[in-house]
Image (cartoon, rainbow, N blue to C red; front, side, top):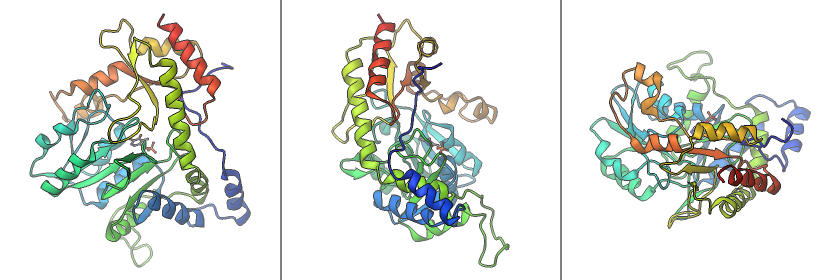
Length: 371
Ligand SMILES: *Cc1c(COP(=O)(O)O)cnc(C)c1O
């Protein structure tokens, strides 16, 4: 379809071409190239951490983080049911157990007030996953961290450039992780990173990323992965990171435009523009259908698709995933808000590359649809 408006279009408006040409002109294309270190240092600094360890994607970053913290058999990690599978699988593939928490229908994030009741003597960490537009309520999480001596793994994939009470998201984790998939605040095509301020953890992450090569080449004490990032990806990353403030500004402009054009539609709600702690960064612009809507997310997405508008559903809860039920995980557990978010939520074209005209067209089509 010619005029189809995809759910995401990235924005490559800075030095991307220049730095990619440098990779080719210098023949530095592998992970040994200079952009990797530069990108790591820049991103770590951006979120007030000391060390960055770039890797192949955000899923890999989470796996590395869990392993580096030595979380494994008999250990529990608290995380939301409503999130991407990467979070749960990083825990499970390292031999530990995810313990789920329901969501908050207003912020679409993990309901922080339910975390404490899930803490046991086996709990090692809280996986903080900031979703859609707002950060989690970090004051409460930091209180729990201190009280129960827990690690924080901060999945900042959707929240680079966001702050909580003025403090950068990504600065709260013992290890914080990022994804640079094309729908994130900055992109490297595929890519990810762990950041930390602990030197020992940083060395551990680096080793895990690179097959745990020992002091003596080809002699290994442990198993890791080849999750290295290439210089080509990092070249994109540096160019994108130079534009982060601009990207954040654009995201908020996209959000305000949709608020203005769709905010009065009585068939669904948008997320709020701000809370006391932060301003929505609109990783995506999501629509939550009214509770007793005569429409279903599935039929709306199908109809909007026919009208040339790309959409995507919200995450499917972890406690309903067939793969985990087969593993006898989460049997009989109930997280009604996580289910509601999946049943009532979807998102509309809101990538950094979208034009104002397309935002107007999407809004008009949606408003007409609900007439
Ligand atoms: C995108 C995303 C990931 C996974 O990142 P990939 O780079 O796609 O592997 C993990 N967590 C969250 C919250 C994400 O949005």
